Length: 395
Ligand code: ATP
Ligand code: MG
Ligand code: FE
Image (cartoon, rainbow, N blue to C red; front, side, top):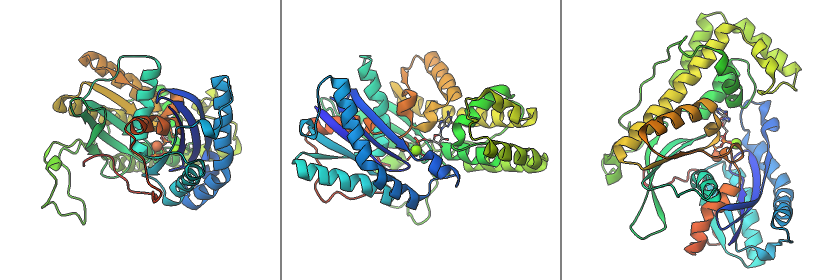
């Protein structure tokens, strides 16, 4: 069961070879972070062009590294299938991966498997627990997928005797994603891009209780504009555990404006721009911030993590989840890991996080998510297209 996974939904071009959904023989990621950093966010046109430039060398590299890991040459002919992210993501970016995967499978006469990027994030964690030969996570499983573009809670269940999982979307952000809030707040405070690692590194130096950011959870799903609720599907009747992160971003902005922080932010911005060798890991970065800024950063992170924690555990409790999986770029956050792990331990709930390499976008998770589909011979047809708004499971 050798699957080549391909991922190009956002700003990383990635390819990986995974055996039986558990052993990553290679996992190659070409990140475009430095390209988009100047703009403080991903620029779709630039992303597509970079994917086009990167896709062939990245796939070649994935095959070459897989050969090294396997100890014998692996060629395209040895693959059992090619899996590709069909959505959600940027249309032009997705199309690069899909077109390449279609051409490859057509040429090789191999099956093509379509994967939902969000299911991929969940499988990043499952793949690693399988690799460590841990007892499989028990269903119903609650998955918190939290990244720059997504903040979702899913309950995964399965029919008795069936290996195929069913996903129920039991929570989502009604505005910004959590990672987006990190990126916007970091930018506002004159820190680097992406913002998560900067805030993560600086927060331990501040007082998390200095600025009380209270923002309430959204208990009932607000009707979306243009969507009538009359024929809402039955699953809509259940409880929802939604998030909102645009309020805290505005609250940070207001704090900055009322506390005269503009000048020190400008100094930090220019210092960082002039010293590109400074990274979130540099010890010197603490000196770029006064105590007030450090306290603000610590308080922001404390509030965001608290919100994710409360919603995840309320959902787990009221839906009877027997295990929790956290994934997506924000799953790399050390405070999130520490606090969720502590509460899961208190509640005696198994919880799993991906390794740092598999937290952010990669293709090993796409190949891993494709494995049950290969077993079930659930293949895509040659009319597979990009699905920028693709959803996972029932809403
Ligand atoms: P998508 O949302 O489609 O999955 P993405 O590129 O936005 O794509 P990822 O690559 O999974 O998402 O994650 C990037 C996000 O994770 C960024 O918003 C970044 O700030 C955030 N992030 C990365 N490391 C950390 C961290 N240590 N703490 C908090 N946030 C982090
Ligand atoms: Mg990314
Ligand atoms: Fe992602």
